[in-house]
Length: 438
Image (cartoon, rainbow, N blue to C red; front, side, top):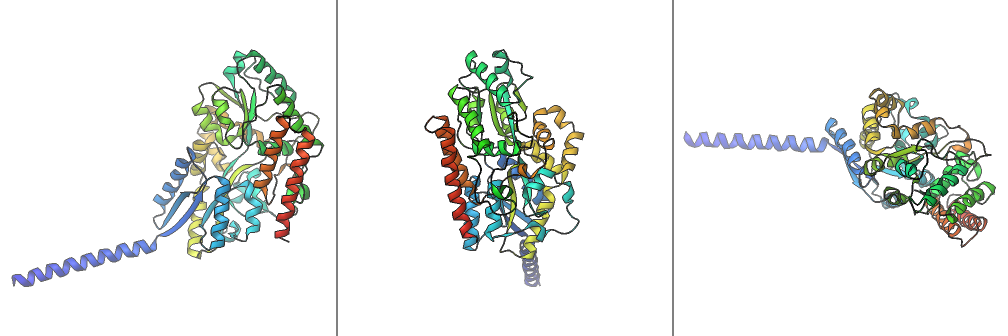
């Protein structure tokens, strides 16, 4: 009798264990895993992780797995290579420079093909963001980390140089005058530098209603030539070169390299992405001001252009997985999620609802530098020339521009010679690219 009791207990234990294993196995099978490759390093990575953790906590049947995959250009190259190799991630973050490459890649599923009608109010997406990434009125990728360029300046150095810290430069002429005063006063070795100098050159074109490339900046058809060596582009580079000769302008290198000079107070002003608002404000040991980019007088007013990146959905996955991706995209545009993303990074929230939430919370009153980019881009003029550029080999073209700009500011080439050299290389790259997609 005693042996029978033990046998029953053991049998019961085995049944319970088997049942538990069965539940665990079923639960594991029910979880849909989504791979998400991104380029958000340093202080932006925790912000990405916060979003993903929030999503995973509220969607137990889906697990988004973020993976830092290098800088923007590395993520783009890896994603295309992975697609060709048959093992693409579900979601990849690609900067705006890679838009034409992704459209031509044959490796993506446009977002409008996985969207479920009525579940995202596309009319709520901030218009310049939607305009930049839309093709024939349809969004191909999911808005995520959008930005534009603004002017940062050191109010303390302005005061030390005898300048009014409430009056940053609004024109090129004022920039030169203020810059000379800063340098001559000895408060800083140089006055101004640029983050992403290639992008700033593009910003100058859109800000002054100047096409950067033919076929309406590559939006009415693949671009075949750039216009950087025409009158306007040469005029801009001539101004920057003149500033460099006077010690006003410091070439600060690509991407975010110039931020170090600004934070070290070796310059008093910086053109940089609004995505640096949070990090610069937090790291600066001086009072930071922000304003619109200075303009050249005598040209029509356009608008600054969108930068940053969007999320692209890759081919090669099941409908169940695309449904999970769609759920993640829906989560991203929740006002509270988008607003927190803005607070954590400085990138635009992607919806007007999130902007309203930030206003209701008093965020912009407490953090006015976060408002500057909104006011700048939402008060610009909407015309085709200010909508942004699409170029296939955009990464290489930007490199060609930076090389030419360095030669100009160092006096190795005249501005016209430098821009001719840049345009010849850019047009060669465009020709090679377009031949691949005839």
